[in-house]
Image (cartoon, rainbow, N blue to C red):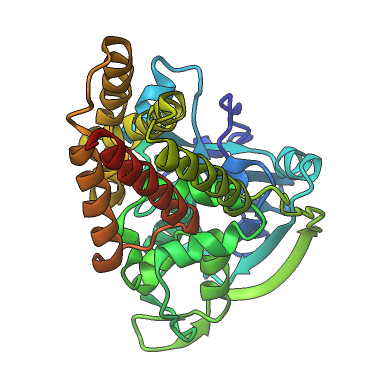
Length: 393
């Protein structure tokens, strides 16, 4: 999805930025210049889980090359983490040599596939001019959007701008949601999957159009493999001339046996045991509830902030904000206050009602919830019922 470069690369264009207006002074468009789409396989790190896309330009006669990468950013910029959470992250188009690009991905064990584009000399010239114009300091920065405007979609769009005619994608269209696509990439990363499921809402549970599906690098790779260009004169030619494997994928991620489902199932069992004891003795283990609601509230701070303040897509359609919000922290403080002052918890019924509303929403809204969320809701419901029972006596 994005290379997430920590520092910006030096621009190794070897004088390509000095190309004159006709584009033919130093580039061999007809004989030696080729453009390729590079697709990198997913890595094991969280930021690399969805792969990456870049555009390679090679002048074989002049022995120049550059990988144009729309996935770079400067993590040292002021308030970077906060801006990233808010969806105000500026990404940049930068360039590096193919040798350095392949070295970086070989170090992480990622595979790299090259799809050589079947472009005419005029299309190559146009694509080079577009890339060189985009890589200028005044043009290279753009507001990154992980779903609708990421590094893969930027590469797709600039290739489409360069062709004489129209790129037609004829791969059989899949009926799939964005969440299903993300889950495919996180099969062996259940904790990452839980985190993403907690943050993203109903918007990504609708069938995704073909172009939206191309936000995942290997989806776009498969699309252009069977795509073709329909020229202005009606002629038709394949978009990809040949495919080469530049690096073999050596990543072998194995799933952790301690998945969220296992952890929260154990927590549910503990909750049931504590609740049975509390029910029989008619007294609450308040400390346990305080810990639960503090965890609920901390998760709620992140979810509610994204829901209200972030520009990221899909976070403002997240029904989980009903259960996971900062008010749970206030309720935890209230529990401590009632315990210290030896007062009845008059808000126990309100807390249970909130849990009940969320359970109803889980069964009625068109949002897919992580299985662990069902367990979380059940845990909070059980403690809510016991609290109402104890405080009503």
